[in-house]
Length: 440
Image 1 (cartoon, rainbow, N blue to C red):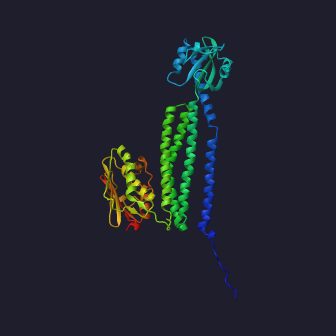
Image 2 (cartoon, rainbow, N blue to C red):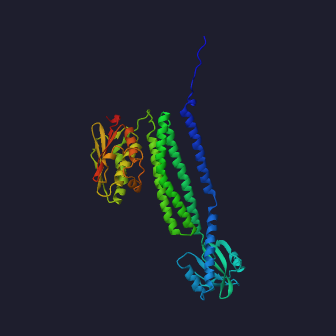
Image 3 (cartoon, helix red, strand yellow):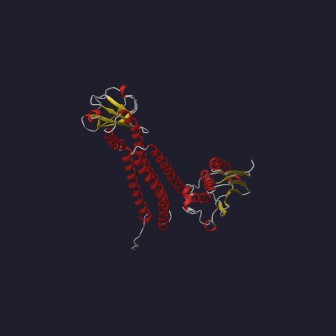
């Protein structure tokens, strides 16, 4: 008897498996590109480039001062006034090497300057540059000297500044580049991890979920990344002109944008973790009373800074059980996000956090006197990246994932969450978590 040919389809032949292999290859390639960029920025001779730019700036300044020097009678007064309110030091040296004028010290106390390479070059009619330890103040400095004429005599006009300004600018440039590369790797890894886990659902559904998520995540990442790029350009411009005050201001703003991006990445990783299948072989337990108290204390200072009264109404007694069958980290995520959300959207008034043990469940509520949520939006606030007021949410640093994370964590603990809000009067979130089976 002739049997019919079999058509066995292995797992490796499935569209999902083929997509997963392609996804891993693309991820590895992109990660390697980011790593290569990271290495290039880390190892590139940024200091040399910054020194070259600064020498060019100092040369231009020295040439301008040399042109003005031809029309003055008091060289000492001229160099002091020219260097006033700056960290520059200006020195005028005669052909015999003696110092005619100096913006910082009495020129008669200074030694002969012949033999200094930048001075010798300027006395020969050429621009000169050098970097060394100053014999006067024992600091590492950049020196630039140009030919000058004073009272009909050929001299050398030298300008110097501490090399610490160059180091600060170079470090800021390098750190900016490293932060951008590092955050790019982290953000891509988070998106890749989440997308890969979503591949466990049927392919067609996964494609839709992946498309929506990538679009939303890309949109949310665009703002801080654009901010980081603009700030990196501003830092570069500030370093070009040696503006340390602006440099520090831009670095602080860059740190804020990096923190915003980091918060979004952390929320994405939490979302990925919450959507994992829990290990059925272990039953985690969370002490809701202890976790809520920790979250309350952690946010009390933040509420105080805004002038908001944060109150904890603990209705439990020592004999009450406040345990739930859930990961302690999930319970902490729920309370942290609800309290922080209340603080963000409350400008004045108070926030009341309540813990109430009942026969079969523990009820936790967070009630604020904030701006409230319109009725039409209340059914969608637990969706990923959904914002009632986008401008306000970004202003206070929200990622659009907080309530989505809360919903996932509550569902993993077999609980429920509901919202009751009136626009302009406040919002109350109520979480109900079943008591731990081991305690019943």
